[in-house]
Image (tube, rainbow, N blue to C red; front, side, top):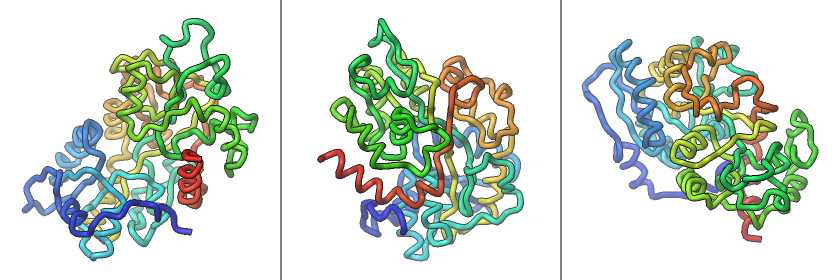
Length: 350
């Protein structure tokens, strides 16, 4: 079954305008080497420019045109119209897995050696460009006495009262956390027992806040409107830097990957694959990890060479002695995201 049919449709004319460069910044359009890069915008796209694009330009002379935001619906429209303009897009690997060969190019450059990456983190149309975790942490200012010490405490509102904020998307780490808190051994979490997970999440439903954006999560934590959170590494770091007195709980967390994917019909596919290989090389991986607090995509890169700040180290799930982590099962999520999202939406209002 194809996933993500739930995506909101936007008019083709609007999407094509966006795809052609609305919201972007361009270099010399006459350059022989050109790549159009679509991403999230904001500081993270600036970090991509600094750590990844500038060194590649220095090495190859490639000129980048930056577009934001990178939306799956725009890829669908461009491919359907036969007018793909983007070469690389920073978006969920789920899309690339669900529509591999249909809306996204298969990666066939020998330099993209999948044996370099952790097991379970690659697909025919994606390789990881960085790694992160869905980190469970609490606001220490709201727990002057007993402190949460395990993932079970996220679901214990009697001993640890307060709102729990999560990103409003099923793949944000909550379902795996619910199962482990309910007694499932971490290495037996997949395939997800959704009935059991929903039953566990039901026990704290009245204390859950479903955030529409990572910015909302950050604001709730800084304003002490939420006592606990499960959210991505980078947003946890930014929230702490903004004043939230967060303490991570290294009992159980899920890990995941970020990916740059190539839309079907990309005008510079070969060069885009060269860029993907370049991004995962140690120098660029380390530079990007240092800026963002994420982890390099390849396990052969020593995290001690990154030069993380103290606050980045505090929330880095890939350092030693950080409890049990499991990689989110890529094939399970590719196959089940659409059905689970529908169930999740219905459950929230039920």
